[in-house]
Image 1 (cartoon, rainbow, N blue to C red):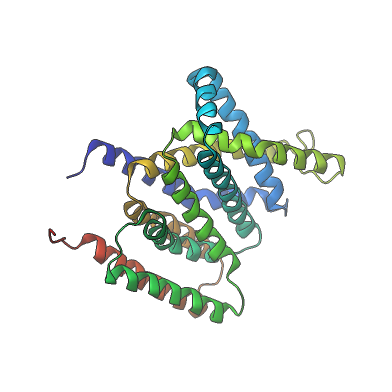
Image 2: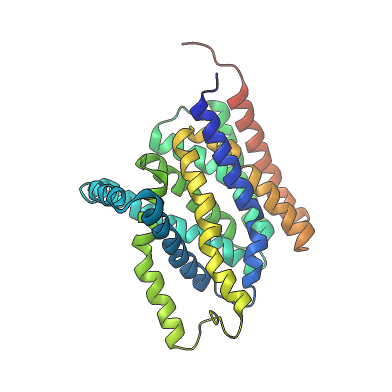
Length: 300
């Protein structure tokens, strides 16, 4: 029977993945930048500004102070939060770089892998039960990756990085089990010095694309990265805390369906046998995964 907390988790997770599915349309605004790291640095800084304003006006500095004290007193929590911040930054970078470099379909294929990667993290790190059918599902996904390597003729960098970083991020947030908004704020604040330093370097070297006077539209897009990142991340964090990773993995199928469709029908990327064959193995794994989750369980 579905509880109110589970229903809330589903609502937040579905909203997050629909948002992420359409996010490549936003990243196309930075095609002329040609530097995913500059976009990610702005994302971190502007997200930090947004979250700082939220803390000041809504959460209260005392609340964030208490949260920080609890994190700093636990080496485990601090390490998990740092690792989550790095995983999040890498995931955002590969999503931006994949769009800028014209690999939207590969990103979509990788995002299809993410649910199975997430389920694998649940098995490895949280000792969630693995059944023979689930084992076959994961093996099918692995075969899909192998086929991708052969058909592409190289390492499927975007597909594997987008799936592994996000599966790890979900597992880290599950392990933390702390306030969604405050943990996101601390993650961001931990990354802000490096991000701000990089942006200062770009300005000093004359390499920055953030030029409000010369290109106000692009400058506005840079500033909007904070909002575009913070909203789905917060929704995802809430969903990850309220749902089992196996359920969260199922909801993740929304994003890759949208991303692959965008790659084919909006960005006009090729979608032939090279892209379809590995997807067939991954889809077979997904079908087995769904069968395993939906079949009735016998009481021990």
